[in-house]
Structures are given as structure tokens and as C-alpha cells.
Length: 573
Image 1 (cartoon, rainbow, N blue to C red):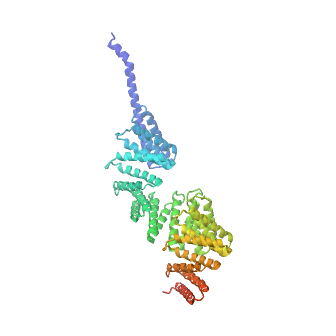
Image 2 (cartoon, rainbow, N blue to C red):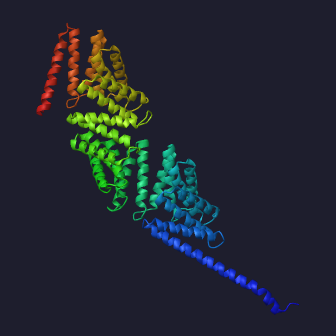
Image 3 (cartoon, one colour):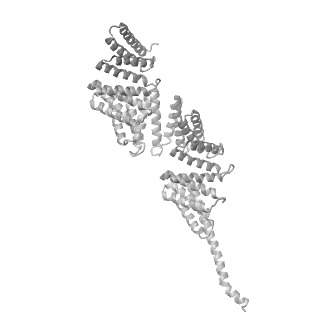
């Protein structure tokens, strides 16, 4: 029989071992707590600073805590959630894709630890969805976006009305749906996006720190629907929301320049619809303020310069103030100085500068502007291979500028090149393209000019065919129609002079009369319409010399032409 003393002697090592083990567990638990507290303090410190070293130290703390959690020390879910969010924060700071991938892996581990019914499942779903959406934006893998949407939807279901986190889930889900809408254009997605943004806005009343962000997102979605469906009320509502956002944004807010730009862009859209100069003036004022907030070296300065140049260009086109044109050219040049040649918008900006230089040539007549316009178009085209959606605009401006230089200097090569460019533009435009008729008109006129110079009948026939096609595409009320009719009549007269077919001459007179009917007194094409009709009737008189009324009518038209010129010059009413 073993005595109690012997039992105590035998059990003492086990008791000591158990006590040591308990003490070690306590030490490890305290170490886990210390690591978590230190990591949390560093992460909070980093939110208000750019101390990336401290952020890295926070990640090291959470990684060490995760090692202890893998041994059963502390709470593994809490550790992984902290580690995931900190890795994601460092990715947003530094941009290292490895941090984003690691954050996703850790969030996936938290999801396995939070089965349906777990109180922290919505947090795991939400964090993983945010990280997956970000990776989609980085790498473009559609599967990441689809998975993010599914997880956001589940997280939202776990955050019913009244849950303080519901507004965040609504906004983030809607952001992801908006990305998918931009990919595939599903109108149903857009309607759901607007509904959910409206619900999120109700959960973020005036005074809520995230109200401005939700207003901005809803305004963007409404503008998108305006472009889709054309409902003016969507654009008006978007502008009201952008204005509220700006009122919520103090002058020193880092996002003020972006918000000024968003409101300016919406105002420009409404100006394009309604033509109210106040909208365009307000947009330009806001873009000037935005430019002051983006000094040299600021990442957003290039975009602001481009938007301001575009707005000034639009105001010059509308009202003809040469100072606006000069400022637009200056801003386009500054943009190109700051923009690398490989930038996605470089060639588009070069083309816009070329268009403004051509407009200044038309205003001032400085041939250097015309030559620079041609050079800039050629530079832009070198960066736009066939198939580039922006190539046709550069080609069209180049073709018009070459034709203009031919008119100035008479170099046959410029005219031939202009025709080649016009033909390429025409072939690149699908049926229904808004600029197809405009391109056809210019091509027809260039062919007619070459016929006048070279006498090739094929050019004249081609010109007449192109004029006919262009006029079929131009509505009776379009501002370009009178000019198209006048040029068509000129080509018909030329063919009459070559072939002698009375029908061509009759049609030329009819086209000139139609053009005159579309150009009332004060219209810039009025005198040209009168002159063309007078010339057509004079030609008709020569052919039908037995009708003296034609001669009288031609003289009357010439008299009216001279009278209207005097009225314009002297300002007589």
C-alpha cells in the first residue's frame, strides 16, 4: 500500500508541470493581448499620418499575434480581422499587390471561422467584398467583382434596417453594382443602384460624416441615367446634389477640387442641353477655383487643366470671345507639358489643341496656327492606329485644315491629302454616326474643288453623289443644311456647264431657293444664299434667254444682297 507521502512525492512533478504550463499559457495570452493592443495603437496612429513604417510594425504585431492564435492563444477571428484590414490599409497606401492578395486570403480565413449565424459573419463578408472589388479594379478579373457583389448582398441581408452598419453595406454594394453596370450596361442594375443610393442617403441625414460621399455617388448615377434615357430631371437633381456636396466641403478639404470638377462637368452637360450661358460661366468659375487647389505637381492638375480648356473652348464656340480661345489654347499646351506622351488622353488633348489652333487661324489669319494645327493632327494620328475611336476626329480636323491650306497656297498635294483623309473618315464612320453628313459635305466640296482645278469629270460626279447622300442625312432644320444646299447647287451648275442638261440647272435653282428659305435676315449664310441664287438664275437666264423675268429676278436678288450687306455694315434697322 502506497502512503500519502509517497503519493504526494510522485504527483509533485506533475503538479509543478501543470502550474508551469498554466503560467506559460498566461504569459502567452498576455503577449497576445500586448501585441494586439500595440498593433491597434499603431494602426490608429497611421490613420492620421503617412507613417508607413508604423503601419508595417502594426502588421508585424498582428502577424505575431496570429501565430499565437494558431496555438489556441487569444481569439483567432479577432486577430485575422485586424491583420486583414491593416494589410488592406497598407495596400491603399503603398500599392503593393502582395498586400492586397494577402488581405484577401486572411479575410477568406475569417469567413471560414464565421459560419451562417455567427455574429461576426457580416464583418468578414464586408471586408472580403471590399478587398475583392479593389482587386478587380486593379487586375480586371470579372470573377472578383461578381464575388464581391454576392458577398455584399449577403452582408446587407445580415444588416437589416436599423443596423448601424447598413448604410455602409448599401453604399459599398451599390458601388460594386455600378462597376458592373459600366462593364455590361444592364439597365436594371442602374435602377437598383439609384434606389439603393437613395436608401443609403436616408440613413445619412444632414450632419452625417459620409453624407457628401453618398450624395456624390447618387449624383453620378443620376447623370449616368440622364445620358441613357435623356430625362432632364435626372441631370437637374444631380446638379442640386453636387451643389449640396460642395456646401459640405470646406475650402481646405482635400477633395474640394474633385467636387468642384464634378459640379462643373454636370453644369456643362446642362449647358449642352439647354444652352444657358450661366451654367457654362459657373462651370468655368468652379474649374478656375479647382485649378488653384491643384498647384504644379498635384496629381489632379492635368485633369483640371483639360476640363477648363474644354469649357473655355465651348464658350468661345458659343459666343466668339477670342480671350476664351486664347486661354483654352494656353491650358491645352500646359496640359500637354505635364502629360506623358503615353498617357491615354495625350492624343485626344493634342487633337483638341489642333482644333483650337484652327479656330484661331480662322479668327486671326495667322498661317503659323494653320501649320501648327496640321502638325498636331499628324502627331495625334501617329498615336491612334486605325480602329481607335478618337481617330476620326483627328482625321476630320486634319482634312479640313489641309483643304484650307490649299485654298491659301494652292499646293495640289494638300488638296489630294485632304480628300484621302476625308475618305478615310467617311469609311470609318458607321451608318447613323452623328458626323457622317458633316464629313460627306466636306468630302464633296473638296472633290468639287479638285474638279474646278483639274477638270476630271469623275471628281464632279463623285462630288454630286456625296452631296446627295449628305443632304439625305441632314434634317430640314439643321444649321448645316443651307450650306450643303449651296455647295450642291454649285456642283450641279458645274455639271450643267460641262454636259448642258437643263435638269441640273433647274435643280441648282431649286436648291438655292431652298437654302434662301432656310436663311432669314441675320443668318450668317444669308448673303451666300442670295449670291448663289443670283448666280444660278443668271446661268438659267443665259440658257433660257427668251424669258426676261429671269434677268429681272436675278437683278432683284443682287439688289437685295447689296442692301443687306449695307444694313449689316452700317447697323441700319
